[in-house]
Image (tube, rainbow, N blue to C red; front, side, top):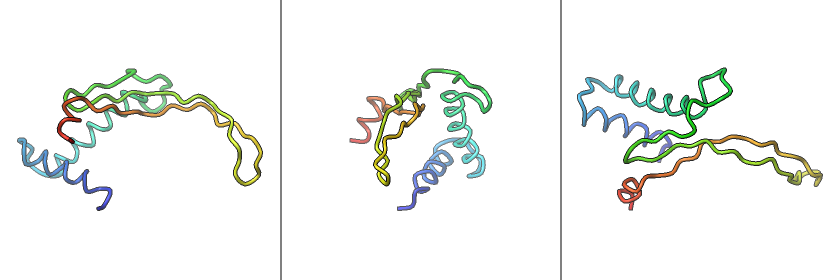
Length: 103
């Protein structure tokens, strides 16, 4: 299965279930939704603070930024300790409805 299969299926489903006139418009709609989620979670390029701490999409799930603490690990080649800095990442938690549909 190709990694883009789900993406293409999403575009085709939106086109067939709604009043979207073409695949091109459906693709723009899907891309803009994901861009809005990323911008809301991580902030618009150039800003330091995210717009929201979490983004809730009803009946689908919640996107939330989380922070990993900095930690010391061993470099596998030199066996020397090195520090990995703290980093932010986007986490997703599926809603009850989404979990029920997947089961």
